[in-house]
Image (cartoon, rainbow, N blue to C red; front, side):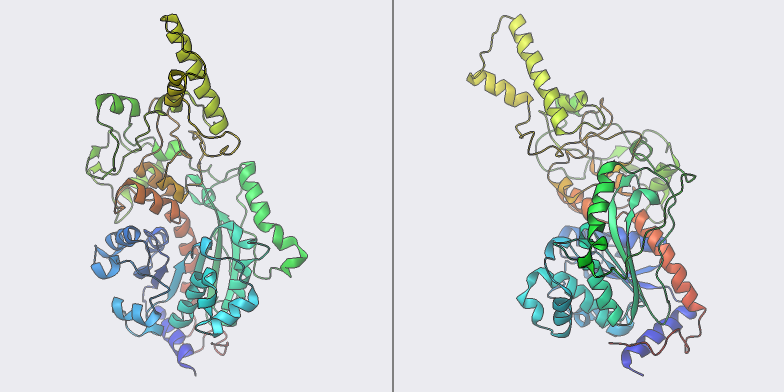
Length: 501
């Protein structure tokens, strides 16, 4: 019996004895996946995250700020053995039962099946193709830690990335290492998240504990807008083409029934949070240019108004504080009046039309006061610049969007860390973009979850994360498979003679 297979069987025996499945979160960010798995009964034993502020957030929320767990690590420069030693989790192959994570898709380009296998076999080959480095390091960690289960999360485009199905290639590589794999597309809105976020989810199990991969049933229903249906169609296009050579590991996600509860809306998620009147704060001088730090507590002013809001304030281990310190917004003085004018669903072209009308109204008011401003004059241009955003309508049609109160939010991106115009609050009286805490609510982070750093890094951490409630749905489903493994005889696991690389 190989040492790797022996480690696998020891882990199965440990679970049989009542042990909690231990998770290593790679590319962990602030911990969206970790939080979902923790809520589903897993133990978060370690993480690897390159961004210092995100790593600090992960360490603070899951390891009480322990410096060892709060330090940023570069997966390309940290070997599995080195990580196991730093975290003091014992022998590498015995340390973790589950590996999870979402390697950044930006780092991966045109790496086909031959290249994946070449890099996997030759330790130095990845240095000649840095674009593949992060995915390959993920696979190396799987090889070294021999987990019983693996979760890979990414954007839908990995199914059709420059004519390649990267998810299929990863599945094939894992299959060669003794895993049974499956991947699909899941939308967070079907799993209780007040956000329409489409993601590729790949699950793999050791053949000793499972023969098939399935995915969790939806808990909520929504008719997704055309844009999301289009995104899914583009991602799936390669699967139907001859180039795909059959996507053997792709599985259709369970369909949501119309009889399920409706998807959680932005209003459901945010309605109990304290209102922030941006124009009033600006007028009073309380809102100024500069870094937004989390040092101004804002108490809740009402009880939770929905079951979702109550969950966000009572999540076990992450209960709401007495007052919120990260309910902070961007300083955008030119645009607050424009936000108030916009209608739900308006994007930048509509916003520009509103702004031009506001500009014309202002010129008319000046004319009534006896001040005629000539088109093309310096004064004319200065007044226009103080009211009308400068962006080209043809180039930035989707740059802005005012949310609907009665729909889930559109996808929160890491770009929130730069401007937040993609999520303008639905309440025209508040006339602003969403706060950090509101972004966290829309992502299903509970109010007691802490984001390290200032406003911009916090927005980025949220936009990069996997929604915890989506992760919890997946983790709960995976736990059932692992519990089934506990009922198997440790010394006679399913397909115990499966190939082990």
